[in-house]
Length: 223
Image 1 (tube, one colour):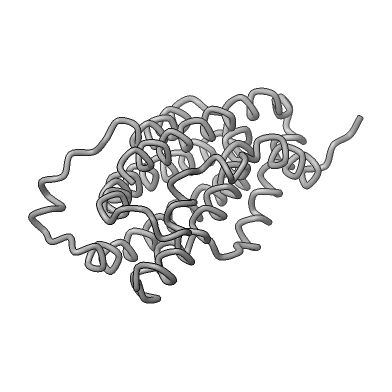
Image 2 (cartoon, rainbow, N blue to C red):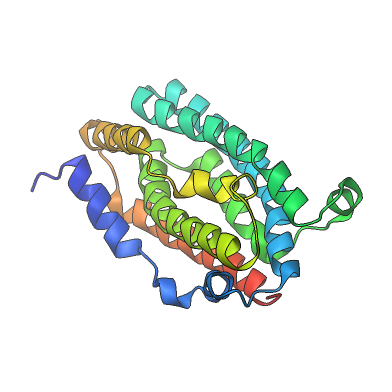
């Protein structure tokens, strides 16, 4: 049976989609019951997650190009540039959290929050480019939804303005151009000599979702 990239992406995203009701931290921010320390911790953790992911995506772009997978390389290059933009949005978020340079420098990252970027780095080293595209695309849908809910909660209950919520708005916004790049990359994998191992991509996607759930659960323990 022939599968199109669009169908594979849709099926994988549906299969890996987590239950939003299980995300206690995001629900608490939405309801205005999360403690400020948990929101500040999220911000501090992202100061470590973002540069790690940016380097991982840049490495994936280089690997994909070297392997003759230009569509995958373009997708990862876009992700790397996106992480650069996201990093720029962290400063106003940190300011809204009342975090100064001393607090930022003194912060020690939590293992439960850093498992996700660590696994992304592993995929950057060993993952098949098109399979990583598929796994990440499924994960990004859930991440974007969580960011949208957090941005709404911070505005409604914590008095955060548009500048301080720009980090979450960036990831929550639709990205049709990136979606087109993902489809092209997955199709490139399907059409390749070795094909695309959807089962392997789903395995990686399940691990990504599990590590992201660990990220949120770790913050929920502080909320």
